[in-house]
Amino acid sequence: MTDRTDEGNTQAKSSGTRGGLGLRARVVAVAALLLLTVAGGLVASSGGPAKRLVDPGDSTLGYRSGDAGPVHFTGNLDRGSVLRGSDGALRMELVLTADEVPRMALARVPTDVVVVLDRSGSMGGKPLADAISSVQELVARLGNEDRFALVTYASDARLAIPMQAATPLHRTRWSAQVAGVRAGGGTNMAAGVDLATQTVGGLRRDGRTARVILLSDGHANQGDHSLEGLRARAARVAKDEYVLSTVGVGLDFDEALMTVLADAGTGNFYYVREGSDLGDVFAGEFDSARETVASAVAVEIELAPGVELKDAAGYPIEREGRVARFRPGSLFSGQSRHVWLTFTSPTTTPGEVPLGDFRVTYREPGVRSGDAHVVRFDRTPHVACVEAEAEYVASLDPETVVRAINQDGLATLKRQVARAVSSGRFDDARQEIKDYRKKNEVMYRSLGIVQSDAESFGAAADLDLKVEEAAQAPSPAVRKALSKTLDAEGQDLRRIGAKHQ
Image 1 (cartoon, helix red, strand yellow):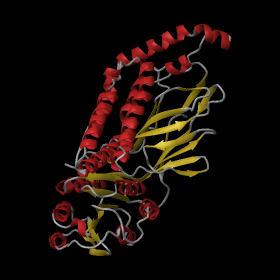
Image 2 (image 1 turned 90 degrees about the horizontal axis):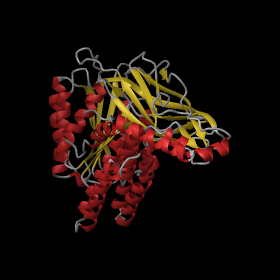
Image 3 (image 1 turned 180 degrees about the vertical axis):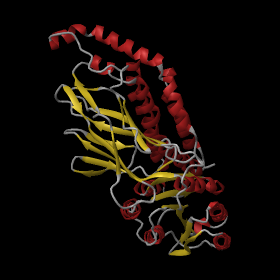
Image 4 (image 1 turned 60 degrees about the vertical axis):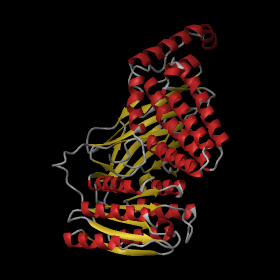
């Protein structure tokens, strides 16, 4: 398997069970005590007893789309109110789900696969040998109705295998052609991506899905190697409604760049420390493509006045007037993708505040013409702006708050620490961990959770130890490995369910 952990999936399960009925009972009790403590002040300031605007035990914090069609989505707010005069921050856990189609009944979508393989000098030896073996494994999985192409790049880019149907004769010939790839030269990634998009774009056909898998072990250093230039190239893939995923191999690739390319191309990013794990990556990407039930998926939120979408699990956010849009990629059969959204809501005037109109658009796999399908929430998500802290605390949903801390919060921390460790700023990494603990202590006290019981504090302590080990290690390889591992773990933890298992 690739150098990723199952931490995200484990935390998704454990955080939900940890915050069960006992936790809900504790938060209600804490809120009740707070209400009793400040009752006099509330009566004096408001002219009457405090009124609960949101009950964390009811369903007002959960939203769902209709049941028609293969795509559904739900949203759970982590709180029902924001404090007047505060920053108005709140989170929503958005879950995009595709209907499970029995394997025997699944209409397998013919798939075009393009592998963009780095053959620069640094790939020589075992890295290239492992990559060649993995591409050969992928070729062997293709069906007669699939098509395949291989682009290789170093100082230039070459179409080593033109797009062709994966007949038995072609698969045999491709295996020998792949084995003949040799390493040497610089890293002109832009040329490789350009040639891949030209290859796919010039041969797209309705009724087929397409996936590009870009592999590199180093930094782009020739051609247009600017972040914006490469991002724009990957964005063309999303515009043409197919997927670009990226794979970083070893310890010397640019993880920030590879993540940006995958996000712009609505695909996944993988960190593979050992090239022998590439086979699993290629297999997962191919299975995702062949089992697609919805492509060109986009989440659109027509934000209410004063409401802002600050973050969507790191996905690029497009803005058109009051509409905020992000593109999490396609959905395969039975997939559930979890995306944490961070909003800010107006906090100047007490009362109900709508967040906006939420909708998800998508197309049937391989269909690029006509109107997209649209699903919407059954009602408009909203929060209340309140003046009393007790009222605000009582509106918190403990299970969702804990999941947000253990998933989105911890994922953000890991990526911040990864960046600091990557550049040798170990004191900054330690400070990030300290700030994370301090911020969450306040929330946990509100929820009545003892620090020793908080899963996130255990994870932070483990992270502290890893940073210290990297700081004391004599070899920079330890620092590089930790940085890349944490970056990949953080990415996966923010987007649980994004990859085919």
